[in-house]
Amino acid sequence: MRAPPEEFEPSALVELLADGWGFEVAAADYAAVGGGSYHWVVRDLEGNRGFVTVDDLDRKPWLGETRESAFDGLRRAFDTAVALRDSGLGFVVAPVPAVRAETVLRVGPRYTIALFPFVDGQAGRFGRYDSAAERTAVVTMLAGLHRATPAVDSIARRIDLDLPGRRRLESGLRELNGAWSGGPFSEPARRALAGHASEVAVALALADRLAVDVARLRASWVVTHGEPHAANVMWAGESRVLVDWDTVALAPPERDLWMVVGDTAQEATLYADATGHRLDQVAVDFFRLRWDLADLAAFTDVLRSPHRRSADTVKAYDGVTKCVAALSSCVRASGES
Image (cartoon, rainbow, N blue to C red; front, side, top):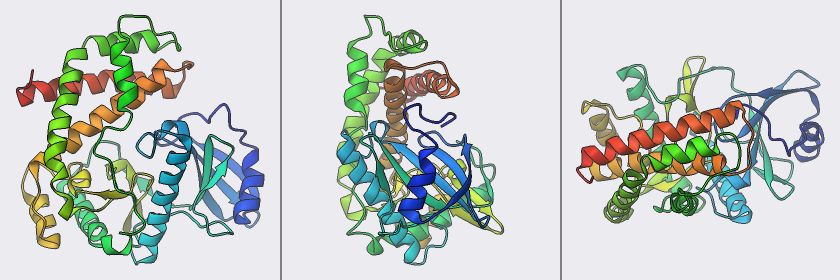
């Protein structure tokens, strides 16, 4: 997120890290990176760095609709990441366990905090891989991750094929005829959604039909990262690592692969040779569509809620306009309109 949460006092980091991890903070700088969590780079008295993540349980619909269920989902996700790292997957940037071995701690009713190792490297750009060589490297990494499923099969949560945040998105669709008054982007977001409401409704129905077919693939479910786009892949020296593990879960492999498989068969063939799994195009289509719908649900929820103009709400409004355009194109391409 581009700005720290208004309800969270950054000075609390010092006490939280000292009590939870024995990390004595000498300096803490907010890191305006990512799109779903709040981050700080911290330094201890000896100059060692750490990367702190604070999550808002009200903004984690893929983990649970309530704060308690979202916290349980986040804990299981971070426990899974630690187990994957401990199983030998060095590219997994997992949390540093707290003094009582917890991977994430609660901060009041709404927030959580986790400490990660600081990775000195360069991340890619969101939404794209610049070359086939990069895609190939990530597919190889994902094949290794998916083969590690037995190490976390009893720990990892299983995704729900239902759309995260669907209830809130459908609430917005039902209320398009009245003004939205949450903040400066409420009405622009309402107008953008209203202009494509029929296509969004068709996209929801299409996702439901595809989900029925994807549900039949349960025999091939594996542990997936969930968001292996270029911005979550970092070069650290000569190695690549995967960050941002709050979405890790058991799912069809296409949950990861749709983001990295190019227009040629090269990456799909590489993955099949490494794992024995042939890409299922229905599952690819489903997870691509589900991504846009979930983003639209999340952005709409933010802009219907009380908000101010900020870099984050500007990004949310831009996200609404891009999502409705992408969904309209998808509906036209599918012949469902």
